[in-house]
Image (cartoon, rainbow over all chains, first blue to last red; front, side):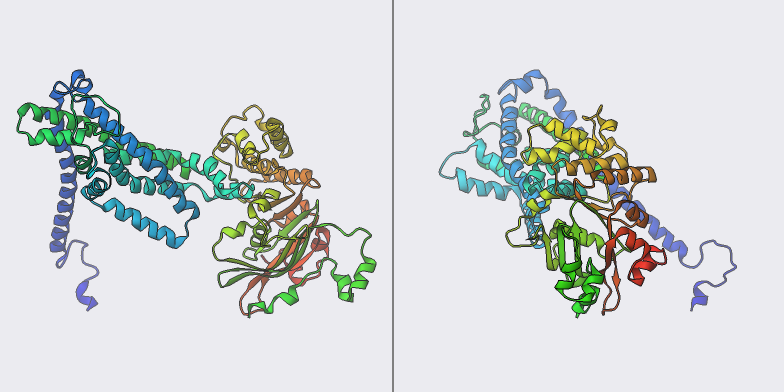
Length: 292
Length: 291
């Protein structure tokens, strides 16, 4: 049998048998995979290009700093407030969860909690929005705070898992060193572990904010009935915000509204892109620092 | 089944006398003032899960002296060292039998707080592990966290002087400790450990990652720290043990039982261990015939 596979060991090393056909199939698979990869890049480029092409002409100083109908300042301000409130809730909790995972949890607790966080991360944002709506808004009133709460739930698993990955990179030797000095674990965590990992924790948080900033569904349920002319930072009323305003303008069939929606989309996309890229660069840097 | 080993490897510091039998004979010939024991390990066996790492160690460690633990790899000497300040507690499957007395207190007693244990029994590790902070902050870290803020500058200086590092770093105390050479980092770790004035220093192969010059500096340092601290050092390097230690304990793998297990073969004055060891296994090891 083996004699048939290699008929003559001394023959020149050119393709023989069905090798030619196998090479064509192999090449086809390679081309298909490469094309898919290019398509992924193309999708991003086309989307960004569209947003830039249609949105750029809407953006000027008035657009950013005045209220409706000349600009979208209140929406930008409101989104910033909502994101800040959400992060103020999610970050401490997320970092504590990460610390629990890396410093205190046993193997079983770790597995269970990681799974929980990953499932939470996979929940559709409309469900979270509905949950917060039922909890805080229904029969009461809309508020930026309830929107922020929904966004905080979205940010929480991202911050916890991201921080945990960086905390795990803190060298074991540092923990041993602080343990061996007779200092209680929590003080070691505060003064050695956290400062060592802070770059990565900030990164995880920025990525989470970038993700949450564009979430629309929970905000439509919790903070969508607002006055687009009023600059406000009071989180206990419904605050204007970018995603719901984009949604509202797109729904109305008014050409000027479309342009405005594209302009806001451009601002939002730029923020998310720059935040993500910057955070990733920062993360790579702090990981390099930790593993060197 | 695993406990078949200990009784035969029991080692007495004053073995020849003890063999004559009886407490009275021992007491009669003992020096007027018995050496004060900082650690008194009695029948210590250590397990990691089902695997026994160490069997029946009886070893006294004397105050103010340098005691070296030597022996081939895997004989349990680092395991024993790490059990002296309960660093093994964080290993999930770790289990210890027997007793380790520290100044007469059971180190593994129920009321013992391991943070307090390590406050008094410092440790320096094989690989230098300075914090990613400045040189000053590395040394000042533990005093600060233990509430010893008064006279911090003096404390840092005296610790750095104690570790023979002051002259090399006094002009760059605010620089990152990670910029120091390996040998300097290890001396910084020693300074960090002595800054809180522990009672005991445990050194786990402190020079194994260093070049000969840095190793010499660490050995000089140990001589200068002797007396102030009780020092226990694990080393692979027999010459190092011979150079620095007052007493030497030789650990090896006991193969008589069903499974090989680490055991203390012999402990005595360093000169005796190297010149006239009682056990043939010690003789083979110190003469370089194995290990």
